[in-house]
Image (cartoon, rainbow, N blue to C red; front, side, top):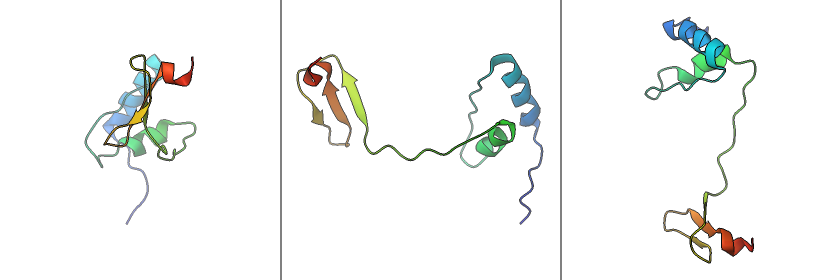
Length: 81
């Protein structure tokens, strides 16, 4: 399989948008080349690990708890602030 990058129409559009705004949101279906196209324009890139947990900070309530979907909900007052 040939792993060389093939230029896309999106490359020119991305370059123009980056010059105008400095940051661009690239949207599309899975496996259509969004990340590969973005990496061609990037000066550097890195992959982040998945977070160890998800938390919502709220101003309502007085305690913290973990929802059934695994998300921890923490009230600001529970932090002692």
